[in-house]
Amino acid sequence: MKTFKRALAVLLTLVLVSSSFVCFAADGEKQYHKYDKYLLLGDSEASGFRDFEYRMTEFTFAPDSYSDFIAQELGAELIPMACPGFRTVELRHVLEDDYVVQDDYLYSAVPHHQPHEIEAKIPEIRQAIIDADLITLGIGGNDWGAFLGWVMTDFLEDHPLPEDYENALREFLKNATVEDNIIKTIVEFAQMFNAMDALLETLPRAVVYAFKTLNENWGHIIEDIYAMNPDVTLVVVGMFVTTYKTTPEAPDVVIEPDPMAVEVEQMIIDYGNKPMVDNEEKYGYIYVDTKGTVVEESHPTVAGHRHIANRILEELPDASFPYTDISINSSEYKAVEYMYLNNLMKGETETTFGGEKEITEAELSQVLNKISGSYEITDSTKSVNRLQLNMAVNKVSGETGIIAMFKQLISIIELIFSGNAFKNVTRAEAALRIYQAVRYK
Image (cartoon, rainbow, N blue to C red; front, side, top):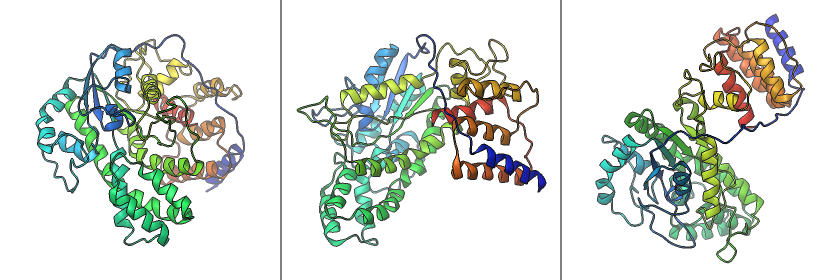
């Protein structure tokens, strides 16, 4: 108990201290790995569907889409296998022979292909996965999108809203399609009928239900892809809000969005992206945040696609990365790559990082001093335990106040009850913890 009290006293002191990270840029031009075949998987966002100027994008090449920009930059052959209307349900059905679909809407949102036509493509899609060097997967919007409208319709039976608002909402939802911006209209109606409080109380529960299929299917889809091609570089493209819009008359001018609409949709998008973010470390794929994408109605403009392409290219592994003991598909790869590119942590040798070795107080303090410019450097060869690491990183990352205190308190309790209060941290674990603090700062 005395140990716990002393640790807590140190914690309460540290959480009151704040500083900020300095972002480092990599020296020189990025070197990409050689990707001969680039496979595009996903829905209409991935396929390059356009709102203002219709063009067929089911399993076809779409100029000026993010896959086009990426393929050109990498000099790779683009294999387009994205299909508007695809949900995780459809993709999992394509990838698994024994998946029993319990869904009344299978393929119902796909505009121009009948179910038997899509299923005829299954061998081609699976072979493309096997042959690919690089895969980008952009899916999830249709798991809620217009389908959220169907969910809201059912949800209203047991959770009534103010009468005028509910009547207007029901009329809209009755005819909504995958091309409609469901969230935008729901929010606009709530503002019109002064029912925002009721919406904010009801919507999160409906969203949880609407995202059920995405949460259930996500891990299966990732495992299916890696089972077919365990060495592929897999990039998961996150979803984005569709409130930053242009018009056909002024495609380069972004209309100032309603702040409430942005806030509500961002809440939903964050929830939808959660399984993608949470499973990045587990499976070792690359998650790409696409905040700031500009759309026409609900699909990206050319500039929006360029933005997504740039974010993907930024996150691709750098071919100059020298450490042979850190696998490109490992959970700590991006963290160690960040340490290398920004000269924050040196390797054990020129070609090995030594991720399994315990990090010392001297090593940790040198890294944190490079980041903050103010962290006190120690020359101690003592190893760092998990609690010391968390408190030191939180101090440098500027996490202060009651939230940081509870984070540390939970960390202490977990360590005490697991019997690992003095378990030491490896260099790879430390790199990952520091990278997460920098990345999500």
